[in-house]
Image 1 (cartoon, rainbow, N blue to C red):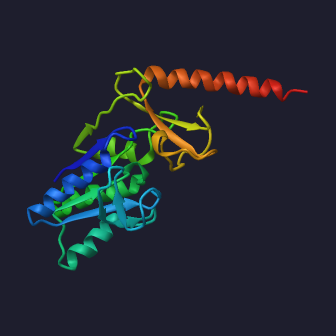
Image 2 (tube, rainbow, N blue to C red):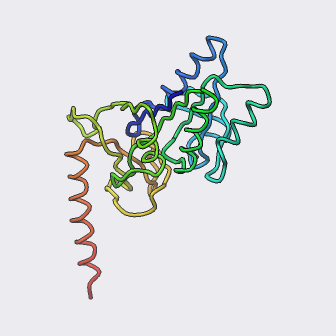
Image 3 (cartoon, rainbow, N blue to C red):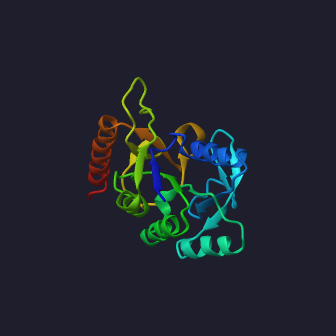
Length: 217
């Protein structure tokens, strides 16, 4: 059976698509199993929630959890899932992606993963890299750059704070998009095309050089 990885930038409706896809199974009288890494703190514990208000119960999983063992326990309990859905799949470990590969092969259960491709620096997440290496099918969920007037495809997740681009710090800093975050000092993300992402990077470098110069002496 196949593993699918549907990736896109933030605000590309990946989670909404997951919830709608899972609901189709429910409407057919089938049994989807929904999982979510605990790093996703935007959604309440035990739920996958989209920005447009859709939500469904899920099992929260930690990096130490063995997903093959989890699904095996569920299968042995008689509640065999017809499909496994994973939101924020970029937060999976490489081992967990391999465990999902075993689930798909051993139990003939399709596995549908949804998540980001790269972090705020444009680098692959561990889970995303492993999915590119092990998924049967990879599909991009497309959206448009949020720079005013731009019609290019968004490729990057720009990190911002107080209106300024940020290119250093922890890889995993959970935040929302700019139109849903107005608090001072809070990190947020804006989907950008390659042109405007690297314009932001140049601006960040200039600001950093100026800041370093002002601190001299």
